[in-house]
Image 1 (cartoon, helix red, strand yellow):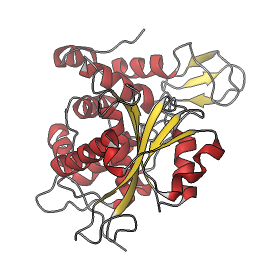
Image 2: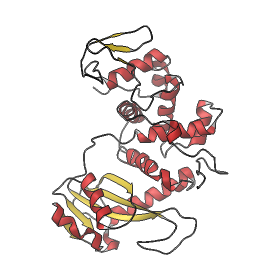
Image 3: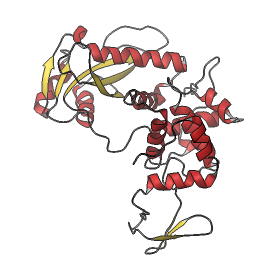
Amino acid sequence: MEDYPRTITEFKNRFNTEDACFLYLEDLRWPDGFRCPNCEHNEAWQTKRGLYQCKKCRRQTSITAGTIFHDSRKPMCLWFEAMWHITNQKFGANALGLQRVLSFGSYHTAWKWLHKLRRAMVRPGREKLIGTVEVDETYIGGERPGKRGRGADNKTLVIIAVEDKAGMSKGRGIGRIRLKRIKDASSDSLIDFIKMNITAGSVIRTDGWLGYEPLKRNGYEHIINGSKNLKIAHLVAALVKRWLLGTYQGAVNPDHLDYYLDEYTFRFNRRKSASRGKLFYRLVQQAVIANPVLGRNITGGMRQKDSGEICAPSN
């Protein structure tokens, strides 16, 4: 059963102590009871330091070990506030806003927390898209317009996949999406993305670019439309660009773009959720199964003037 606060009042009343937060994490990490990460044994006792010691192999494990919260020295109540704030911002949260809400002295800390939590927005083993799926590429970023089309300068290439829940509809019935930065529009890059994100046997709708030619050999049905007829993929591309510009003023370093795309995908695929609390629940749930991210491995931290985000200095 999905258990989450529905309102800010419920949230504050429920998660006002460290014990309450850790109990919630425990239920989400081990919904069927403790499971040792070393030997899979299901019995343990709790030490005075709050660690779980496996009765079989004697390994000690904390609730946060191996999660997004791994080695964090900040109170768990603060992490919960961060996750509630992020999921309750309709159009996304930036680091400057998070710094203010949590009263962080360091902008850099808020920015790193956001990037850690963005990494938790992709659930391991998530279901692939299925049915009729529209696929196209778009370019994001670049200080100058540059040339248009595939191979454009000063821009980052992003591939978009969108379920068309109404089959061959004209822009109606948009389902789930997947977004990813790719190095080029070659067959290898395009087909690798499609195989990773779309169920074999699905109908793939693309333009006439030769990079999509191997689709049939890889077990997909392939429908070629004119570029102007890829309406739902173009709509998602426009929405992503507007979101990046509106929420982050376009100040997104290409090296970090995948994580912003993950955040947009997380929000878009749950856009019809009736409760913001459910988004909070999903983020916490995924944070306890995501791999840890060391702060030193996230580069950047200089806030760009008049922007809510950072633009890491180039090397």
